Every structure is written in structure tokens, then in C-alpha cells.
Image 1 (cartoon, rainbow, N blue to C red):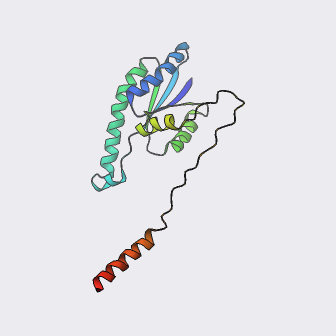
Image 2: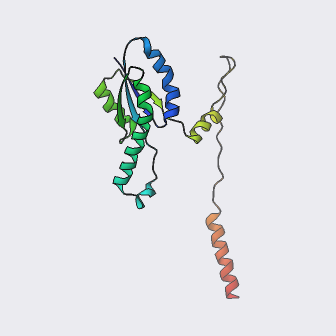
Length: 167
């Protein structure tokens, strides 16, 4: 039995990524899918307004809704499905899951990319070289101007104001 660990935060996006792997798994061997719900992050300032138990309750309800959308779809394909709500950092959780299910488990990250993450790699990915003989493009470092005049300018302004006040 193959075991696949899937990080999920959006059901529709995850279906698009899992569908090809699910189609490959129809060769007769059953697949054990371990769905790991990665709830959206909450800011640290939310603790002023919401208790810890209320946050955990919201995360559990969010995960149940997500699993409710994915479980019927995965189980219809003759697959075994387990669900996990991520409460620890993902690398630590992955180690725990690999100890539980074996080190040969596959990992599929089906989380929806964030807006700034989706545009950033496209903007900064260098063009591949046309031929292997070209040297890589040199990196350009932009040096920001220093702020060496902030303190003397402030002191000069204070001195002028005191001079005007004395006059």
C-alpha cells in the first residue's frame, strides 16, 4: 500500500493537484491518503479578542469543513483516508507522520500559494541561458544611501530654533 501525505488548505485547489496522482493510483494498488489540514495563520494580535480555546475550536471547525469537502471525493476512488490537523510546524509533523507510516511515504504539497508568493518567483526567476557556453549573469547589488545626516540635521534645526527663541 502506497502512503501519500498531502498538505491541504483549500479543497478545490487540492483536487486539481491530487487528481493526476489519483488517476495514476487506479492500477489496482490501494493508496492511503493522509490529509494534513493547514489552517490559515492568525495574527498575534488576535489574542486580545479571542481566547486560545476559541481559536482551537475555530481551527477544528475549519478543518472539519475542509475534510468534509475532500473525504467523499477521495473515498469514492477506493482509497483509505486519514485526517490530521496541523498544530505543530510542518517539518516536525512530517517527521512524526513518517515515523508512524514509514519513511517511504510520498509528500504532496497541495496548499494554495499566497498572492505575493505566486508573483514573486515569476518576477525574479532569471531567463535560462540560450546556450551552455554563456557565463551566468552577474548579480547586481544595489546599495542604499546611508542616513548619515539625520542626527546633525536635527541638532542644527534645534540650535536654530533656540537661537530664534533667544532673539
